[in-house]
Image (cartoon, rainbow, N blue to C red):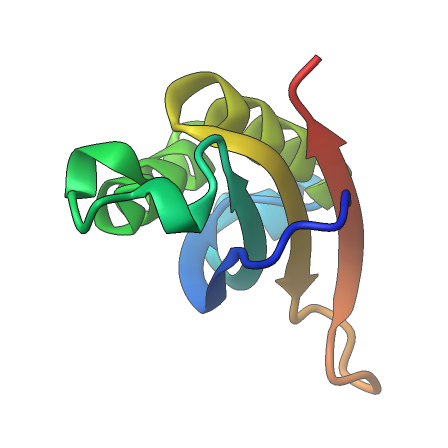
Length: 120
């Protein structure tokens, strides 16, 4: 990410998604968690204490939760790309850095994908 003074963090957002390579794994929705680091289009000093000048993180989190549950996917990488694309296209975000965690392997705390995307 570029050197900006501030960003918006969303940590531990709970998602429910039918995700996994084997058909059996996609049969039931499973818990994922998402961490987002968002760089708004406007500098934080220019927000003038107005919601319309920043990222509505309530609306953003609900949109991402809906996206995660829309359809089955085999890869968390696919869902991560879709989340980045959605956030950049639908919200006043210049850059998004995410970590998407999946709790699937018994002998690990989690597996995750980290991804960073920016508006072109």
